Length: 529
Image (spheres, rainbow, N blue to C red):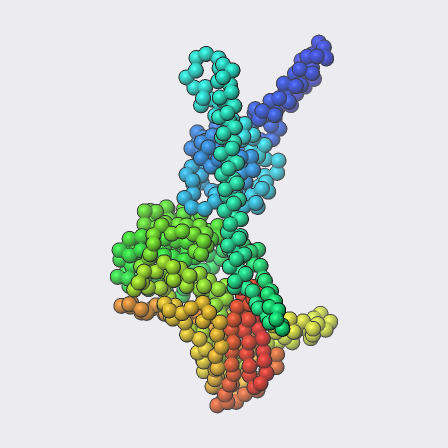
């Protein structure tokens, strides 16, 4: 910024001139005309300019980003404009992705988190986008006019501006109405699923759990790249899906495929490469926008259609699909309850004789003797830097933990407690109870029961594929679910642990599980969350 010396300042002859100049200067600021005290960083590179106007000129010439066209394309008002600028600065998104409307759902910058400036006192955020819209509308009407506008023309221009603003406001109102409608749908669904009726005399009392905030938090967690990176780097998981699809391409050849909870779209791209005629990929989280870019980057946009939303809420572009694929598994298989969505899609969209993959899953238990792991969770609270915190043991024992269990610590044969045929099971069948018998294989102290699951791709497959999350198998991001015993059990080889397990959704949090064991008449309760 240039520094002015006293001799550079012009002398003013009277107060009126000073007042008029000052008014003009402030008018320039109000009109958004090239006045800023801060250098302005480009939206797409590191170059600095002297004003937002020059910055936008640079963006148009160097990055093919014309703010006027963008404003009209996305119907930006001052709020959505601010969110878009902060979205661009925070994500470093390339300009090309902003020059077309996203085909499904809301724009990626509509989250209120983008109201927070990425650059403090960012001059670009002070640019008057609505004045730009009015100026563009005015100039469009005035093009080709040789005479000064008449009063009638001025009235017409005002009417055009009013209609444009009404259209923008109407679109915003429609978006809000759709959001309210989705909340209402979720309210109704939660009322049906979460209402528990208890009868007392002639009165029926209903308790209702509202989980809209929990749902939003759940989907937001899958909007971050980190969780998808972890899943993609899980070779057992990803390569099993890849091998199943590529080695059984006849299942996908010329078929319409639905990918429920597509994430980055890796399964959809496998299916497209295997010859699927059309793949429809659905995901509610913000990662869907990256998936769109990934699909375009790999030249598969003609085969893969991506839709943002819950499968229960969206409308697919087809009436029926031939194959449904999904990676829906959570800890202890059923944590997160995403299988519910897959079963909904199966019942609504799967054609007769259609197939769902994976098609079979099992849950198993083993006994574990690991005194060191037990002490780290339980005995730890007996002496915490010289203080007793034994009351914490109860809290710890109420929750399962997810860990990689040392296979050498397994002291029993496995017991299968649940089999799920995804092609025909019902949502109500996912809450289950089962007796189990664990044959002890060596003398040891049983400190925990451990749950894991196995996944199978078998139906109509010429090459069957499966994988396991058992402790003795290659590690996965699911690890194993550990149910720590408050009081370890001393056992000898040949002994038997007879028990019963019950697993059901937590009514206070539909995506977590309540697991209950009954062993030797004692009841042990855990939450998987």
